[in-house]
Length: 249
Ligand code: CDP
Image (tube, rainbow, N blue to C red; front, side, top):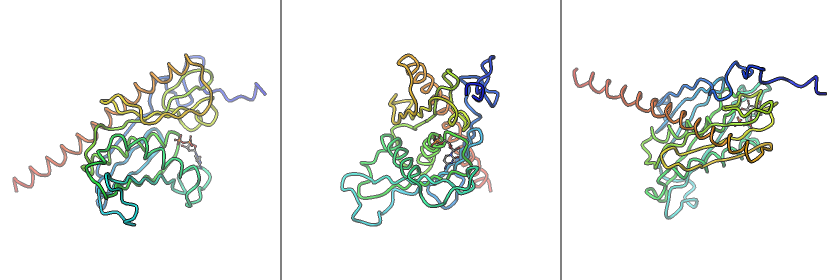
């Protein structure tokens, strides 16, 4: 029934969480949050919170999986049972298997895999709290964690979903917008190479709407890229400070 429809955008163009149509949720990225991983990052985007650990390049087990000419990238996207409203089974779901694959495919073009034949690079993503956009946040944080692990890359990969909600093109959907909106379109992008590494669409857009949404997704990814760079720079400056303190005794 039309009257029962949930309104997601007000007449003033404000969204359920008070954001403007083009506004990202607050983004916080921290680098080097896990001592036992080669590279790690934490991301909070709105209410979504994820932790990423990267290992490698390292010797690959089982060995028969080794690729003679490049590193094998393995990726596991996992949602903690407490990350969603209704407890999620810790066993991998079909959705998690699919997301692990598309996140790996979104990251691989940025990694210089041919420098490390016969090795593996393992990426573990733990969703601690999910409120929409977790596959994009996973790509964003994983690419920072890969850089933190010192893995040579062509570019960082930044990701953000755009979509259509109450007939309007919006940027960085939260869970309610994802669930009750018309379209969800996650995009991952290498800002320096200007290459799109992931583009999915759930719903239908006209050609004009797609063009508008795509443009907004690229501009959102460019903003996310700034957060990635700043997080890496901040981490490096902390290392420099510690080194300086140590050398000063
Ligand atoms: O997180 P993302 O938007 O990339 O993926 P999705 O499959 O479109 O899921 C959207 C949102 O649905 C997630 O971020 C969660 O907030 C929610 N979800 C959930 O509540 N329970 C699940 N088992 C899976 C997703």
